[in-house]
Amino acid sequence: MSYTAFLVIGVLAEYLGTGRFVAGLLLGVLFARFPRISNGKVRIVGLLPKPARRPLIFTLLGLCLVHFLAHSDHVAAGFTGFAIAFLLAFPWLRRALFDRILRSFGRFTGKKPADSADDLVIDGEFRERKE
Image (cartoon, rainbow, N blue to C red):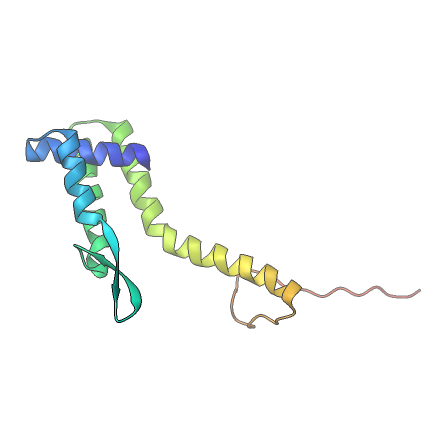
């Protein structure tokens, strides 16, 4: 992912006609979020609204993927394609793994998990027969 960010900053710098440092600063300012206290509550404030962040990231990665494919740079295109696939699958992976981890800790706390929470896990009960 770090190498993909390096590639994205390089492509952005090429299109803007600036150096990598300036392009990185522009992306940093664009995606930065800062804590702010209002009405006694801590809130996160950023330049971009929350619903616009993921589509902009996918747009930048897609632009880089097209750029690399147009220049026949297959290794860089592979890294960028992997980053796009990972970001698309990340919410599902996080939800699936986090739910499974919580489910395993639920046994130790005595809480019974919801019946339909995870359809991928087969739950069975085994008993020994006395002969």
